[in-house]
Length: 252
Ligand SMILES: NC(=O)c1ccc[n+]([C@@H]2O[C@H](COP(=O)([O-])OP(=O)(O)OC[C@H]3O[C@@H](n4cnc5c(N)ncnc54)[C@H](OP(=O)(O)O)[C@@H]3O)[C@@H](O)[C@H]2O)c1
Image 1 (cartoon, rainbow, N blue to C red):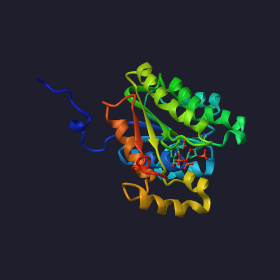
Image 2 (cartoon, protein in one colour):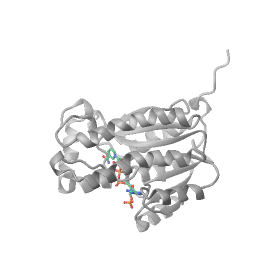
Image 3 (cartoon, protein in one colour):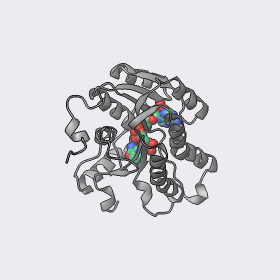
């Protein structure tokens, strides 16, 4: 009996040599770190984000092409995909942070923008990427584990959190043989976390070091390693991968 070649068996040298990786939301945080890792594995990288200066610096550091625009401007997003090379290999979608508020404070306009950023953006990327990503390539979406809890103020974000694995599974079927996977992160030490926590950031890091089963804080490089693995492991599709250092297993 001859075994099918596996990604692990076929691996030598840079894992993404000659491949094109597109990162939507690649100017900072998880997106930038994934771009760095993909570049180190030999990929050509194309980065997008809104802030042109920060994006230009990221592009210069990585030798990457860049395009500055708001990914929730879906017309602009469509033009971006139309201008990409005929075939690309992988797309990682990150972007804006979460929105949550108790019901009586819920701002419906912000909630609507959040649906656009976290649910319609992956759908739009899937529509545009369908004709661009090669068979066996990947779409990778970013979700979270925090919204799996039940708590006052989490109704809206929990609904979005629950929607993403369902979206991912169905798109994996519809876009096959392109693969579609979801990364669900807990706390990741990025500029977004720093912006949300402000002067509470160090206290939160300390608390996580003390309480997480891994006894350290999850960083963007941890998520980047998982993202690149999902780009190269051709056995994986329709799946949700938690990366939270065990945060869901412990209170707080
Ligand atoms: N950090 C965490 O603890 C954590 C946990 C779970 C899930 N996540 C999710 O993972 C994703 C990335 O988080 P991160 O921590 O890496 O955030 P980050 O540090 O703020 O980086 C986000 C990147 O996306 C870009 N971006 C934001 N809004 C955009 C838009 N509308 N259009 C295009 N680019 C946009 C930002 O640049 P510009 O501002 O210049 O556009 C930046 O380059 C987010 O969706 C977040 O909700 C994060």
